[in-house]
Image (cartoon, rainbow, N blue to C red; front, top):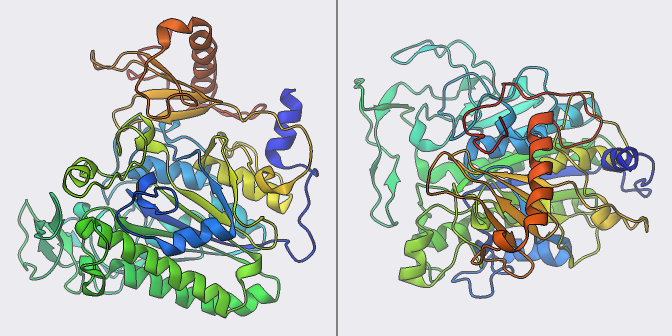
Length: 502
């Protein structure tokens, strides 16, 4: 059985792309802090419309039980790009700032490096947030020198974007290894009058350094991110369109900064929807997605381009105020949001459109994780993954491939909260583990009967608890979810594993 599962995970020869659908282009759009309920087709009661996300659902497949690999920015992005859980690295909780060694180790296979090896143009446009090595130290930079340990060193041919979330500084429009205008001025967060508990990064900036200030380029303005990112993505795809039509495909990873703070919708979107500035910002985000879909139509690339739209984690904690003020539920029917081990923290929108292969308006209700993209792309291309890569990546290509074979259930998905708390999901059962906090005890939920995680049924199902607990120990300590993968965690067991037998 384990051998069969390994074969199916990698794709093997069970499924081959149809003529005209080999080596599809791939556009991966990744939003920042978007909740499951922030899509109008997933949340009929949403206080704003997202017509272009709804279009992806109509024209592709909706994964209704899709999960990010962590509940905050840096670890989710690591899992998405590497097919490996980030808690296997030295990052056990929280996020990175803008400046530190990249969490993706040199030589580790990423979506970009795997696809480039298989003949793809690769690009990243948007927010990185996995660590960069800037020239010099703060206050003593030499911006004539290149940035190291960044997207161009992790499989991407092209990079245009910003280093991290805007509250971490080093804010400039980087292209390749250099800032277009260097971040030689200084600023701190300023009040944002139009959004709940929010800030702005906008001029005027200061020319003298102080300990409470962060680096910023004189031409940087927070509200320009979405337009600049989309403009640059469109420009890059246009440059690669002829190659794509001639058989050399592209992969573009486009991580937006919205609806993460600062919530700063541009004027043309003000007054739209009924969820304040947040709803307007989501409408703007969706509008830029529409620009990308229109480009693919215009360039006659849509049929053989996989468009994936998903988010890095659940909604920021301001989701509570939006419920009270507007009646809008960003987590949808799920419990809590960003940073949380509960479903609202890690169950995210996930749409995949591929007209050449995927039936319009289809859906998949079984669990998948964003770590699964690497194995899924390998299966689509019919290529094996390199050794010691994609340790937690299980292909879900058969959600649309129609092989007709009996499909074994996906191995359990491991959920991980910002504070280091673990949970394990297998079919409809979810076991939430105790943590270093005395208040966080072990819990068990039947998500089929109780998707909102309101009823802890641990005492009634000791057999389920034992089975899931054993699987959790095996996956966490073995170094891999995929069977027969030779790999280990980057550290010995850590203090957050309070439930690990001594």
